[in-house]
Amino acid sequence: MIHIKSNDEIERIRECGIISSELFKMIKKHIQPGISTKELDSIAENFIRKHGAIPSFKGYANFPATLCISINEEIIHGIPSNRKLKNGDIVGIDVGIKKYGLISDSAYTYSVGKITDELKSLLKRTEEALYKGISKIKNEAQINEVSGAIEDYVKKFDYGIVTEYCGHGVGYKNHEDPEIPNYRFTKGSRKLKTGMVIAIEPMINLGQGGCYILNDGWTVVTIDGKYSAHFEHTIAVTDDGFDILTINPDDYDSIMAKFF
Image 1 (cartoon, rainbow, N blue to C red):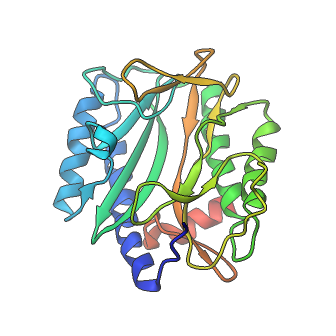
Image 2 (cartoon, one colour):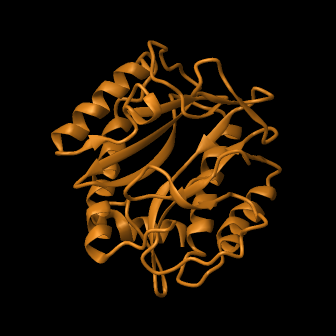
């Protein structure tokens, strides 16, 4: 069942999204060789709670942490630990923030120290793929317009698209209907409607798209061990387009100018 959000609900999700936007700015300063992912998780939880919110992932299906932190070949759902970041790593950080009963969901992949040109391109293109999908969002658009825009862009570079996981509705729960894959699919003729709030999140691999879950029951990794990037925004569908709720309004114009 799809829950159409009111303007008030959307603004409450935006408040969560602004917290996540500021969290990503803050956490970037701490992403350096030698810091552990558990330390990053603690920093993030303190930040979220100081802003009167709670981490929506923590305790969800018994997930033990605030952030999903995924390094290199880890695609999503990495559990923070004593593992320390190293120069040349890439690290995906995914966060859900809940306040006033509503949730935002967003992710960003960072470089650690100096990374290769190949990885720089992967990060740049995965983020661009996110905005290619966002650009197709509007009332009455078919989901495959969004999914297909991501697929077409990514395929230009011969990257692998993860098919087992996808974007989704968000708001009162971490995951709501509808599903928004990063590729065209058989149910993609379903239409978006004004007031829907969805999370778009391309997960793109240097190698093939295949993946599996580690024995911890959470961490999803690439089958071939090649690196993966993940970017995500929470977006409200509007009559004539979209409204990205996980960008601070002060930064909105500059980000739109970068990608559109």
